[in-house]
Amino acid sequence: MFFPEPTKQPVMETTAPAKVETKMPLPVGQALAAMTRSGAGYSHRPNVRDAVRDACASALQPLDGTPPDIVLLFSTTGYDPRAVVDEVRTHIGTSVLVGCSGEGVIARGVADEGKRALCVMAIASRTLRFQSIASTEYGIEPVRSAETLATQILAQGATDIRGVILFADGLQGNCNAFLRTLEARLPPGTILCGGTAGDAMAFERTHQYHGDKAHGDTVSSGAVTGLVIRGAAKVRVETSHGCLPIGTERQITKADAGWLREIDGRRAWDVFREYLDGDPQDLNAEGIVHLCIGEPLSAGATSDHDEFVIHTPLKLDKDTGALFFPGGGIAEGTRVRLTRRDPSQIVSSSRACVKRLLAHSRRPPAFVLQFDCAGRGRILFGSATRDVVVAPMQAEAPETTWAGFFTYGEIAPVGGRPFYHNYTAVLCGVFDEE
Image (cartoon, rainbow, N blue to C red):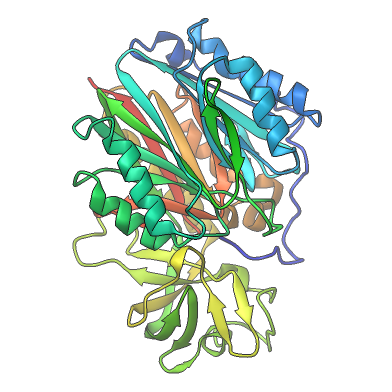
C-alpha cells in the first residue's frame, strides 16, 4: 500500500516507453522447455480489443497451439474490467482464467502504471495441474472465505499441493485473519503468496477475475481468487523491501479493526509526526511517503528476508489521531520500529531477491510472477521504475517468462509462515522438478 504521490516526485509516463513493443519477444528458454511451457504478453493500446488481441497473441505463441491449462490476467482500471475479461475469453477458448486489477502491470521489459495497460500469461504443462479457486466473501467474512477456499482446495486432494497464489481485494478484507485461517486448514508448509488488487490510486473499487467457458467468467469486488499449483514442481518465494529502521523500539498500546490508535500510550499520528519535518497535517505531507512501521520477525524466522514485516497506513482520522492499516492492521501489544524506505536499498535488495530465487535450481524457472507494492514504483522512481528496478531483476533470468502487477498489499511466507506485507516485492518462481 502507498500514499498519494508527493508533488516533488517525478511523474510517471501514461504510456510505455516508445522502444517497448506491444508484442513481447519469445523467451528462448521457453521454446525449449520440456515439461511446462509459458508465455506472457503485454499491451497499453487504448482500445481494449486491440490490447487484448496483442497481449494474448504473445502469451499464446510459445505454446505452439497447445491450449493453455491456465491463463493469468492483470489489468489496470482504465479499461472496463468486464470488457477485458470478455475479450480475453475470445482468445483462450475453454481455458481457466484467474487474476485481478492492478495499480500497474509488470512484464518483461515493462513496468507500466499508466491508465490503460494489461498483461496476460498463458501456461501449459505435462507435469503440473492447476486448480482455480474463488470466494466472494473475502471483504466481509475473511475467515469464512478462507474456509471456503480450503474446502475447494482439499476437495481435489492434499498430497500434491505445491503452492497457492492468491489475488485478493486490496481495499476490503482482513488479510491477516484470512491467512491465519487458510494456513491452519491446509497441509503444514503449504506456500501461500500473491498480491492484493489495485485501482490506480482511486481507492474506490478493485476487481478480481475468475472463470472458464463452461461455467462463465466473473468480475467481482470484495473477493479473492487464486491458483493452486499441483504436481511435479518446486514453488519458491522470495521477498525484499529496502526499508531501514529508525528510532527506538516502540509498542502498540491501542489498536482495533485495522486502526492503530496509540503507540507508547500516545496518539499514533503524534508519534508519526515526530519523524517528519515541519508541521504535517495529513498523509500527504512531504516525507511521509517513505515512513512506515516495521514489525520485527521472531528469532530464527528472518532467513534471507529483512528483519521486519512492513506495514504502512492508508487513512488518518484527524480527530483521534488514529491511523488505519489495511489487511487487518497491527495487533495490540506488538513491539515495532518506525522504518523508512531507502531507494538505493530497494534497488540492491530487489536484485539480490532474484538471485536467491534462482540459487537452488540448475535450470531456469518455468515462469516467474512478481507482486510489487505500488509504493515502490512510480511514487519513488517515476518513469524510471522499469530501468532502475524491474529490468535489473529480470536480467538475472533473461530466458524466463515473467509477469505480474503493482499491488496494494503483498502476500508471502517468511520463516515458513504467510504474512500480509506492504512496501514489499514478492517473487514467486515455479520450477519443473529436475
